[in-house]
Image (tube, rainbow, N blue to C red; front, side, top):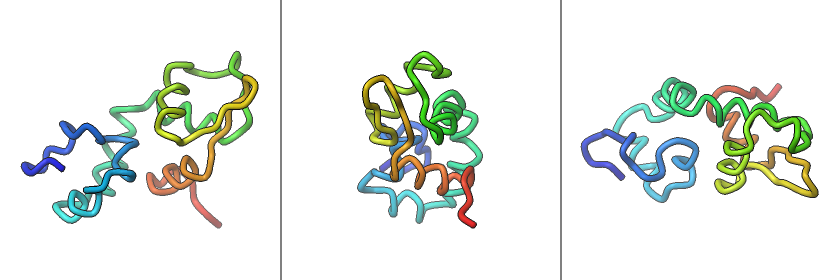
Length: 104
């Protein structure tokens, strides 16, 4: 957790925030949810675009970015099987928390 409220220097900043053990402490310092929704999209647009793409089963050759796919896989937000990729439950929750997906 970053004490001076500059969470952009935190090693878990971005898609890792929600998994961080200090998430509740950081979010109590200021409106972290709103901050993430506004800044995350700007800072990791390629990652979010790839995550949104993977709400449908996508073959490796059709991916927007394989490096972003690798980042999402490392963060545990997608699954990859035999060259096919798709968002998992944690990825769907992340998209929901960022206001990109809405439950009806």
